[in-house]
Every structure is written in structure tokens, then in C-alpha cells.
Image 1: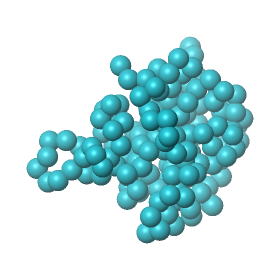
Image 2: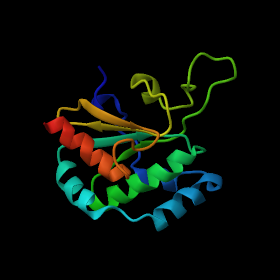
Image 3: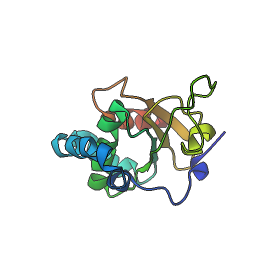
Length: 157
């Protein structure tokens, strides 16, 4: 089973990943970040939880759901002071391929963690073991930050 150790060490944080985007994509990510309001109750919990837990995201720049999620992760990163790794560059394979994503140029972590959708947000515990993931968008709560909190809290019980 893959662990946090399988994530490359030089991977950018969410804020850096947005800054590194091609201009054609960057504007939508920046606008989402400017207008999004974090759930402060969730952020208060994440300030504590992210002392032990790590969050990693994989995404395709052209993906509408990624344009909503990665800016939120960037805001969480800024609010908590903890880097949230964001691996962009996911690319669809040529027509007729049996794979969901072409690796490379998609990050190798896409294959390692069997990523099937963009974005995918992985949550790891203090031992580096994956305790949950958000595929595309939150399913149990209204916001990404609340979903991360729920996954962490559920992993503790």
C-alpha cells in the first residue's frame, strides 16, 4: 500500500502550483481563491489536525472541479501554515487507451495511488497511511475544508 513517502519531495504546495500554472488556466484559479470564504470552524480544527495529518492533491489544470478545489487548498495552506502538496499536470491518454491518465506527463503518483479523477485529495495520518480521499468534490459535507475535517475525525474514532 502506498504511503506519503511515495509523494515526491520536491512537489509544490497548492499556492505555488497555482502560481506555476499557464496563464490560460491561472486566472480561473486565482478568481476562485479571491472570492472563496473558508469555513472558520473547520479551519480552526485543521490548524490542530494538520500538525499530524498531511493533505496531497492531484489535478488537471483544465478540470472545472480542480479550479474550485485547488484554490481552497491554497487558502487552507495559508490559514494553517501547513503545505498542501498539489500535483498538477494530469493529462488524458490518447483515444483508445485503457488507462484513465497518461503517465507521464501526468505525475507518477497518479498511477501509484490509483487516481481515477481530477481533482483527488488524499489525506494521510501521522504514520503516512492514507486515511481517506475526496474524489472530484465533497460528498459528505458542503465544503472541502469540512470534508477534510470529517475524514480526519472519522479516522480517529
